[in-house]
Length: 231
Image 1 (spheres, rainbow, N blue to C red):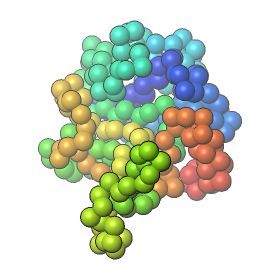
Image 2: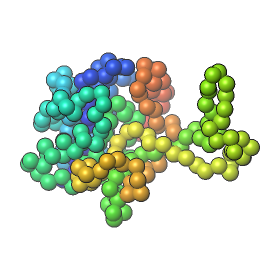
Image 3: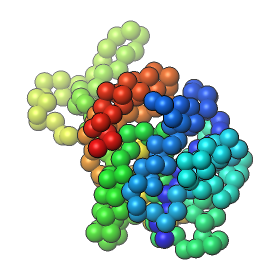
Image 4: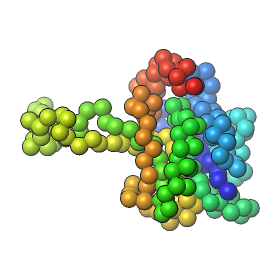
């Protein structure tokens, strides 16, 4: 069985009630639920939450909330992996889970075609444990600067005169979703390793949403690109 698991706890400090705040007309959680359903690859789409209002909104958008997330997995410092492992364990009280896809609740740019690409990649590559979307940095990280005592220094001064085209392309996690085998979720300490597969997506479909400024930028970007995103 393949299951989508969307973690959406109630507490959020920097953006209060972030997981159900309205984003371009509807609760931001709805975008992740809809992408999971529209991908047509999941047997179940589940939201794991400790919050009754989030549970009600999730169900209104056709997700399941079959259990309540325990308090010890709902604080500011709980990493994603144990939350997904707990959800898999709960689901496996009824059915065997082969693959689980964690889809973040604040990922309005997630596309169902990328979700499909993820499971197809895992099915093709024996031995893979995870697959998730990545995108390139917009500027060579080897030219990164730091500011100390109001003075600028390079992190890697040896690359000050290296041509951009001679620097290695670097990528970062798009922060949208993560496919994994059930066993990997239950045993892994992290997802960044040689058993992970990259799903390459363009930078214009990536926006982390951690601060009010991030939220504002994401809404503006989504509104400008709505037709391309929906298609």
